Length: 162
Image 1 (tube, helix red, strand yellow):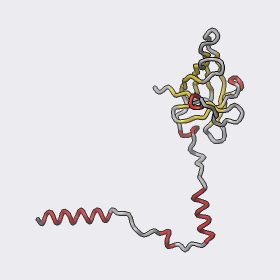
Image 2 (image 1 turned 120 degrees about the vertical axis):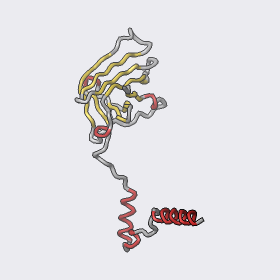
Image 3 (image 1 turned 90 degrees about the vertical axis):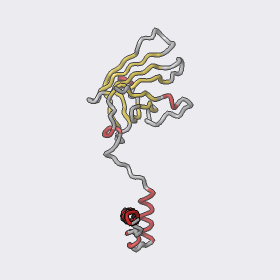
Image 4 (image 1 turned 30 degrees about the horizontal axis):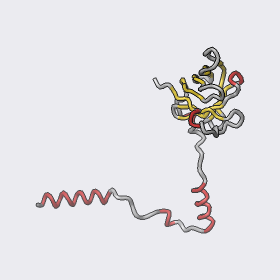
């Protein structure tokens, strides 16, 4: 009986010692309308971490493949290899059209100021892609904005994981 009481006492003591404190140090600071407004503005303003983006945080180099939408064929079988040295190799085969021969281009690419969008050089008509975790997504040519179309979900190429 004594062992049970002692065990329960020790367990209770440990659990209460690990509990979060109920006192909030921020309550000790006297707030004025100006400091409260500044705190609300800071909480409402999202912070962008410029050091952590696709370029610096993701393993983006590799081969991406998929079937992109096509206006006058059943799809474009696409393979885009992004290399760590800033070069690329692009291969496109138009399904159900032509002789099935691949259109190929090579060149360089660069990340935009956000580190999330790449632009291929003039050899690939300066196409833009959003770089995500194990995928890239084709974007509007001029603006780099997401393609707004009923087929928007089909503009992704997935990374070949090894």
